[in-house]
Picture 1: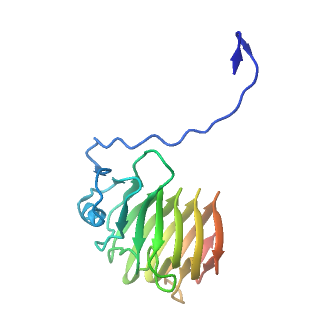
Picture 2: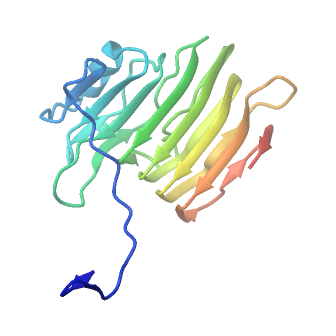
Picture 3: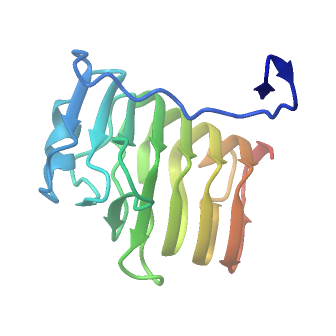
Length: 212
C-alpha cells in the first residue's frame, strides 16, 4: 500500500485459478444448463483430457455412463458461495479395463443420497483397471457411506483430497481398499492436504497402499 508515494504496508494475496476458457474445443460448457442429467450426456461426449464446466449452484446427478477418459469436471465461476452439487447413490462407474491418466473434480459439492449406501466411486472390476490420479480440489463431500471404495482389480496411483471439507461419512471412510491379497485393489499414494474432516467414522480402511 502506498500513500503519497511512500510504502505504508503490504500484504500477500493468493488469487484463485483462472476460469476455464469455455470456447476451447476440448471444453463442454454446461454453465447455462439446469438439466440434472446433462453431466451424464457430457461424460459420454467429452474428449480425452477434456473439461466439463457445470453451472454454479445447479444440481446434477452422478453419471450412469462410465468414466473411461481423463477428464476434469469443475464449476463455472459466479457470485455467491453455493457450489455446483452432484448427488450420488451407488457411485460413479469406471469403465472395466480402462487406463485413465486422471479424474479431476473441483469446486463441487457431493451429497450422498444415503449415508448407509452412497459413494462417489465404488468400482468392483475383475479386469485390471487403473487411474493415475483421482483428485478432489475445493470440494465439499458429505452424507455417504464412503468417498472411495475399490475392489478386485482396481488400482489408483495418486489419491488426492485438498482444500476440501469432508463430513458425515460412514464406516467406509475417505478410502477403503476392500479386497485382500496380492495384486488386488490398491492405492499407491494418498495426499490429504489443507482439508477438514469432521464426523467421519473412519478415515481409511486399507488392504494395500504404499504411502500416505
